[in-house]
Amino acid sequence: MKQNYIYVPAPVNEFRCRVPLKNAVQQFIVNGKVQGSNHPFNLELKDNEVMDNLLQLIGVRNSDYIDQLSCAESFKFGKYSVGNILHCSHSFSLDRFVTNENIDIFLDEGASVDYIVMQNEHNKADHNTVFNINLSQNSSLRMVFLSLHGGVISNTINVNMNGEHSECTLGGLYLTDSKQLMNNSIDLNHFKPDCKSYQLFKGILDDYGVTRFYGRINVAPGAQKTEAYQANHNLLISDNAKAYSKPQLEIYADDVKCSHGATVGRLNEMELFYMRTRGISAAEARLLQQMAFAYEVLAMISNEELRTRMQSLVEKRLKGEFAHCKNCSKNCC
Image 1 (spheres, helix red, strand yellow):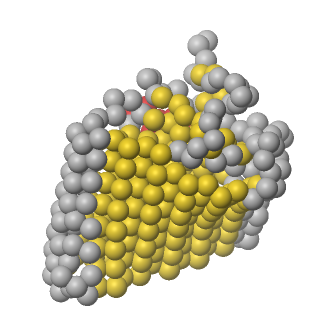
Image 2 (cartoon, one colour):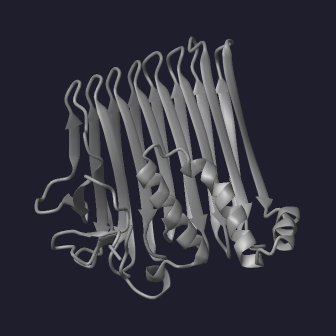
């Protein structure tokens, strides 16, 4: 049987990528620096430049540097450029890691970007990431976060819609168990009229997992014809899991369409009973319901091949099949 992963060059040849994307370009960022150099990662697309292949950035923490790390990356997309990014975070040893990461993303006029974030580190890793995002007129950003594993994961997402007719779509799926903590804080500012934003974040919480969601949509004076939507939904698998949610709107314009909401619930017992009467085992019925809950976010990934692979990873995570989480220090995406 053909293996569905590729090996990458030393010095991180212990890494097996489980995302078998055709023609993808891989770039490692080891302990905050580009592999083979002493510089942080910076990407700049020129005007009208189109990324033919997906760029997979693989951020690595390993035992070569176990002190607290602060690092930064920047992405600038020129006028009418097209970008396609998969940004992964991993830990290759079971050391106590604390990572503070700052990511600047700028879209010039008419730029269009798909940006997928996958976070997958061990239980002793704390990873705090601040995303500063600025959109110019007629630009479009689709950004999806997939938080599979980590001790403490904190995402602070600041979005400024600085030009008319810009669009921003944010999606997030986070999975917690053990005593893991997941924080998402979103501050989305509509500064100009005729802009659209859409946010959907979902969490599946097991054991003693805790999640906190804070989301604020700010519609500035004069930002008429704004359309903004925000939702946060959480599924509690355990009686000990806790989800905190605080979506909010601040609107200073009078011709807008804005809505927000949050839910915290459990598996639907009637649906589970129905599946059991059809011969489906209890474990499989629970998994099917969780996957159905997660799929709405996964469907936001436009790359079909990547979406299929991410769906498989989520299913394996929910089944407890990520061996590195409990048994070894190897970490794969």
